[in-house]
Every structure is written in structure tokens, then in C-alpha cells.
Image 1 (cartoon, rainbow, N blue to C red):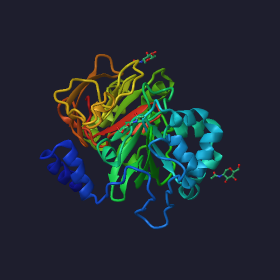
Image 2 (image 1 turned 120 degrees about the horizontal axis):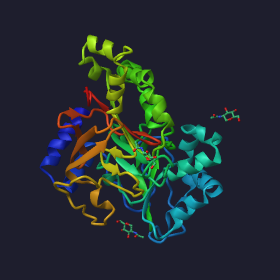
Image 3 (image 1 turned 30 degrees about the vertical axis):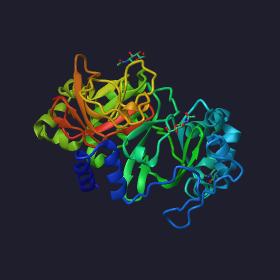
Length: 383
Ligand SMILES: *[C@@H]1O[C@H](CO)[C@@H](O)[C@H](O)[C@H]1NC(C)=O
Ligand SMILES: *[C@@H]1O[C@H](CO)[C@@H](O)[C@H](O)[C@H]1NC(C)=O
Ligand SMILES: *[C@@H]1O[C@H](CO)[C@@H](O)[C@H](O)[C@H]1NC(C)=O
């Protein structure tokens, strides 16, 4: 996959954004889907066919009209009707122009049986998490690693974001649902069929760090518990967070003696300072979006300084930064007093690197939590 990305990036360098996306589509043999409701040609056998409503014109029907008249979406339409009036209103409103991801009836039953037992509140949150505030085609989805949803968790200083990856099977959301090739168009947006129900992140960022594989993160996890930093963050009052989780490899660079000292009684304060310099509260930095302190705004990658920006072909203010290029700079205030992390985000459409303090290249990015985000770093950001 890495090689594939590199290859695509090489092509991107010589192309405009649109051509880049076209090449990408070609390369991954994703056929471009039709813009209007058509009987679907599912890429895999056994997939339920999306038959468009015969009674109405998709250009005049709202997303809600289309969903409620499409046989394959009858289950999800019933869920919305019974549990989420506001979701129905959002999907019916002509003021909106949205993307909604929905599993067909077959997939809801076979692959997402858990929804039967969800509380009404969780079901409501889950449905909001399937809606994006902009109309996005499959090509648009290729361009962006995370997208904001209609779900606004209380502990996050912006909308919850879903994560998009490119896999052999197609575009993958949150590591479980595949976006099917066919979509249906409505007057107020686009409906994409997906292979299973999505689940908004349920754990807090700090707990997500404690849940990372111990084989790679046991030292940081142990440090968080040993210094009681874990408890302090769990009890703290904040909205949004960014945690850089250093791997065991990052700690091993310190050498056995120094690690031994840090975990001794005398080294405890120093170890805590190291931990604190990896934790940012009240600011959330995803690879393509920044939620500032006290901001409650949609953000698709604004913030910091833009050295260079590619004006999106749609030229609407919201979509402007969807497929941005350029370098943005952020200064994040950590829990350790006076310790600022300087993060540069270098982006060429889908290809994004985050560099901390000029030298540390962030590894795995955008592990989403209900109150923030976690990124993996292969070096300590303070020692
Ligand atoms: C849902 O709850 C019922 C009991 O209320 C249980 O028997 C069933 O196994 C649960 N199903 C799932 C998918 O968790
Ligand atoms: C929604 O966006 C699409 C594509 O940009 C556009 O064609 C359509 O007219 C928009 N619909 C509304 C209701 O603004
Ligand atoms: C985060 O914000 C909350 C509420 O505004 C505030 O009480 C808290 O002190 C802030 N924490 C940090 C570390 O900035």
C-alpha cells in the first residue's frame, strides 16, 4: 500500500488535483459512478441492488425522499423515522447539501447486528455520524483522510470526524465499512451505499492510547499510569485533545539506564514531564483539520499559516480546503508548562505528512477518539 501511495503521489506531482484524482480512479480500477440514481452494478456478487424510486425525479427529491422510497434502504429509513426526527429533517431540508453513507438492509442485518441493542440515544448519535455537511463524490472521498460529520460530541471542540482510507476493496471508512461504487443523487446531496453501519469513536483519547498494542506502546502506557498522569487527564475538564503517543522504539533510544532512572522514584517527575509534553488539551489537530481552543466550527483544514493553497474547483467556502496543498504551521500548547509543540503539516492533496519540531515525522495518524485524536511518534518530543 505504501508503494502504491508513493506511485500515485509521483503521478500527482505532475498533475492537477482533478487529473490526479482521475489517475487514482483509473489505477485503483474504481469505475466512476453515475451521478444519477441508476440500478446498481455491485462490484461483488450478493450485494443488494439499489433500485431507484420510480415515482420521482432525483433532481427534485430530497435525500430523505429517495431513502424512504428505496427498497434496499427500508431498514435504515425505519430506524431514522422511529428514532431520529432531526436526522430525517436534516436529510429532507433543501437548505442542506449533504453526503450520507448508509448500509443497505442486507448489510445492516448480516454485518451490523449490534444495532438491534443500541440505546435510542446511541442510535441517534450513530445516525448523525453517517452524515457529512457537503455533497461529495467518490473522487472527492479519495482526496481526504478525515471528514467532519453531523455528530458533535460534548467533549470534542468540533464535529466528530470519520476516517477514510484507500484499500484494495475500495474506499474504507473507519477501518470497517467499504464505500460501494454506486451512489444515488438527490436534490440536496448524495447517498453512498456502504458495507456496514459506522460506529462513532466511543473511547477517550487517553484510553485509546492505553488500548494501543502493548507490544509497541507498553512503556508510554506504563509511564502514564506510573506517574498518575492517566488519572489526571481522565479527571480533567477539557474539550478536544491531541495526544502524540511515542512508541517503545522512541523510548528505547534513551537507553536502559535512563529508562531505569525515569521509572525509579527519583526520576518520576522527569518521566511525568516527558508524558505531559506529549499531551495537548483543548486543541485538536487532525492531519487535515484543526479545532482551535473554544472553536465550535466546521473545519476542513484551515488554521495555521497557509503557504500555498489550491482553490477547489467548486469554489464554495466550505469545500475550499477539502483537497488543499501547501504547508501549514501549528503551535500546540502541551500540559507541560511552557512546552510548545511546533507542528508542520505538509500536504499535497491526499498525501500528508506531519512533522513535529522540524525533525519527528508522525507515524500512524488520526486515531479518532470521542474527545480528540491520537498520533503515533517514533521519537520522544521531549527528553
Ligand atoms: C441483544 O440483547 C439480547 C437480550 O436483550 C441478547 O439476547 C442478544 O444476544 C443481543 N444481541 C446482540 C447482537 O448483542
Ligand atoms: C448541491 O451540490 C451539487 C454539486 O455541487 C449541485 O449540483 C446542487 O445544485 C447543489 N444543490 C443544492 C440544493 O444546493
Ligand atoms: C481546557 O478548557 C477547560 C474549559 O474551558 C478549562 O477549564 C481547562 O483549564 C483547559 N485546560 C487546559 C489544559 O487548557
